[in-house]
Length: 389
Image (cartoon, rainbow, N blue to C red; front, side, top):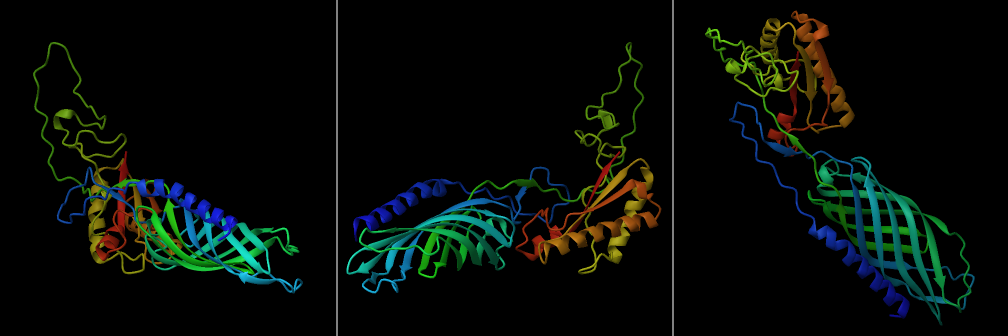
C-alpha cells in the first residue's frame, strides 16, 4: 500500500474514533412503568415515551471498499491494475418524515493504480435523498430493520500522479444506491449499503449512525369521570369577633373545607366537591371499525355526559379524538376529526348548545401507549374531554 492509501486509511480510522466516543457514551432513555389496566383512577405521576416518528438530526461514519475503473480508452498505454481500495465516508443527515431523509456526505475512495505506473485518487462530496420502506420507518428513531433507496448529486475530485495524462470529463455526477438499516430506540444504528457515484466508481460500506436528541416524555392520564362523592354539608359556624372569608386556595369556587380535590388547575370546571369534570379519557366511547359511527354502548355513555352537562350550564367542553398509528397518518387525522364531530353532533342532538362544544382530531400524533401491541393500540384509539368554566 503506497503512502497516499495509508494516509487515507489513517484519516478514516481517526474519524471513527472521534465520532464513536460521543455515540457510545450516550445514555439510554429510561422506560416508563407498564400500564395497569386494573386501576380506575387517573395516573398522576406516570410518564410514557411515545413510539411515534420524530424528526431528528443524525451523524454517521462508514468504512468499506471501493471499485475504481478510470476510463483509459484515450490512453491505450495505461491499464488499470489496482481497482479495489479501502474507503471511508462521513455523513450528516436529517429525518424529514417517516418516508424520507436528507443526507450530506464526504467520501474518500482511495486510489486507482495504472500500469505501467501512476495512480489517480478519488474523493467526492454530495447530497442525497433517502426513501425508506418497511414497518420500522414510522417508529421513534426508526427503531428496527428498514430498507432504503438513495438518489443524489455529487462532486468528484481526482488527484492524478504527475506521469498520468489525465483529463476530467465531468466533475459533477448523479449517484444511486440502496441498503438496509437497523436502529435502536436509543438512537444508535448500523447501515449496510452500496452506492454508484459515477460510471467508474462503485462503493460498498458498513456505517455506524447516531440520531441526536432526547425523547420528550408525555404525561399519561387515564379516565376521569364525573365524581360521585357527595359534598359535605357546610356546618353553621359561630360568628367570630372578626369576619374572615373561608379559604379557597385553588380558586375553583369551592371552599377548602369541603374541597375533595385541592389544587385544581386554574379555569378547570369542577363539581360542588371541587373535583374536575370530564378531564381525560372517557372510557367506552368507541366507534364501529374504520368509521365515525358511535356504538350503542358509546351512545349510552354520552347520554350520561348530557345529563351531567345539564347540571353545569356554564361548562364548555372540548372533544379530542385520537387514533393508533395503523394506516396512513393523513387518513388517521381525518378519521379522528370525523369522530370528534360525531360525538359533538350526538351531544347537540340531545340538548347541549353547540356554542358550548368544540371538536378536534389529532390522528396518531399524541399516543399514550405503544403502537406495537394490540392493547397499546386500543388505548391510543380514544376520546378525551376537557371541560372549562
